[in-house]
Length: 157
Image 1 (cartoon, helix red, strand yellow):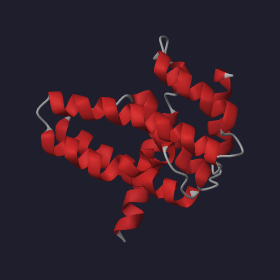
Image 2: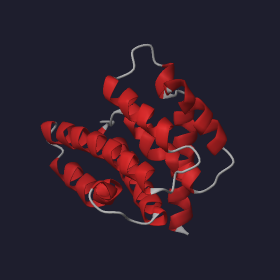
Image 3: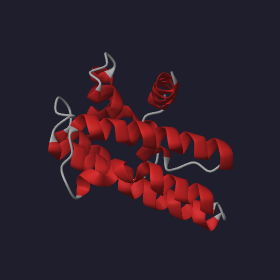
């Protein structure tokens, strides 16, 4: 029963994120734009392929490193440790190939952990990079919204 709660939570958060895509911001962060461009070149139609999962893992790594540092700087040591424990797998494809279903599970667990930490601390990760963690879950699931996600990313070509 709890699994459905968490999956719903991720889908709800992702739906909210889709309302304000990365490209809609007047001055998009260069790092987020870089990763979005890599995602649009490699991932549409191939979300479960190693090259795509590697790009997503690198993006996740950058977001998590910065978010973890922000938590540490705010004396949220327990939250930073929780982030490490529950999000490390979301970056694992950088160094070794894992099946897409395992990465999807890692993305969901990490997104839910970030949501909980954000609720508890009031600190949020880089929102553009957070979108690149959450939105691919739709496409890895073959969700009907995946074509809309892929279309919104096309502005980065």
